[in-house]
Length: 279
Picture 1 (cartoon, rainbow, N blue to C red):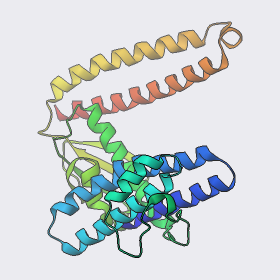
Picture 2: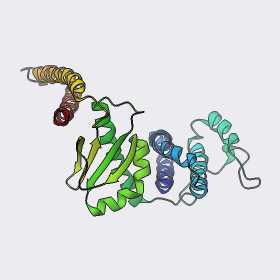
Picture 3: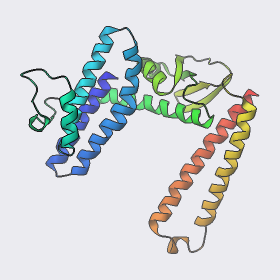
Picture 4: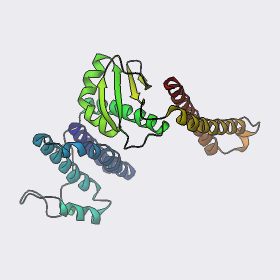
């Protein structure tokens, strides 16, 4: 995850410099926004919590170094758009006398010579891990599991995928609110089966964590609501003058709503099937 964070910093630096060269300022601000919110705060900082609680001094020192680098580079990337708040935060970072600029406004803007850490292989691996995290968190939401309730995950996947995923067990546990991640071709009974690809399944252990009968009642009500939404959208879209009288942006919005609602309904039906098997 340290290598991934460094790679994402490098990618953001590249995008920001290209954006300024082409006077594409939204490209720069989007890169900064994604780096700070979706990559640093949503992922990397969460992964660091168990690291900082551990007694592995080498791992902790590495994490601190990467975090410092991320903050130092990230503030300088953002400084042209938010000069005052970035200056205030920059002054609060530890500085090396004689090496760091005294003010962010005269500090060198980051470039790829300073940040040559792009690693597309690691980025591809973490992207796959994030898909696993997303599918587990969606399932937890479907079964109304609070974040404080830790679940067990059993990965049923090819040896090739398992070799890669084993390196990210800690990150998966943290981001998906799991107590453990194991690799087994014979997972225990009482799991919800989440298919990621033809070579990878995620088995989420629910037995003992939920009351199947109560959850089925809740999900049945939600199913009725979703089916009504789908029916209303289809009825509106089937009107004879729909394409001529309804503005294009509304039609696009309705199409997106229908796709999302039908997808949610399919997940719900799958969840209900798993619950019935536990009764």
